[in-house]
Amino acid sequence: MTREGSLTLDRGLALLQAVADAGGEAATISELAVAIGASRAAVYRLLVPLSERGLVWRDGNKVRLGVGLLRLAGQVLPQLREAARPVLRELAEKVGATAHLSVAQGDQAQAVAVVEPSWTSFHVAYRVGTRHPLSAGAAGKAMTLRPGGGEGWVTSSGELEAGASGVAAPVRGVPGLKASLGVVSLEPLDASVVGPAVVGAAVRLAEVLKQPE
Image (cartoon, rainbow, N blue to C red; front, side, top):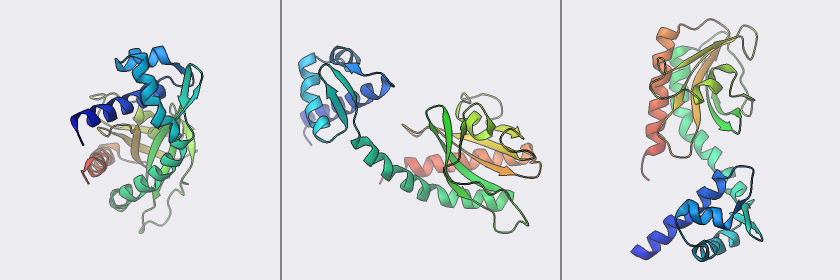
């Protein structure tokens, strides 16, 4: 790819990110031009290929994310789930509790991968697709944990299910991913032992996801 082509790609990606950063509101051409440091004419040119692929949707001067992103997003979770499974398996067997990976969906945490331990007499049956507020449960709270905050993990007890205890840690350093990895059990968890194991698993998963192809 030529330097010019590389710059165009970079600006196109920056433009797509700027549209996404507008949240639920449609961004105007002028706002996008300011956001990526380009002229309005340049923004119009960059929008053409993005619109053709359904990645953005234009309504006059306003731009929103397009439904084409749903198709791409639909391919992300299966790949993320496959990458996480070995890490979750190791953690579940080590701790003896159900291990899970959750990602942020707006103000909700959604479980996208779950692995149950093979050797325990009973364990929590945590379903893929389960959602709960980021403000409740270890998985959600871990996603909002600031770097250097606390001991690197979050605990919860009885917040989502009576008698259930959880420990979770954020998955850091993966661009575009707001997620946490944790375990949940019907028995009390020793956070001093389980916490470092969960943090270690979250670090390993981040390393796997950041590996170049």
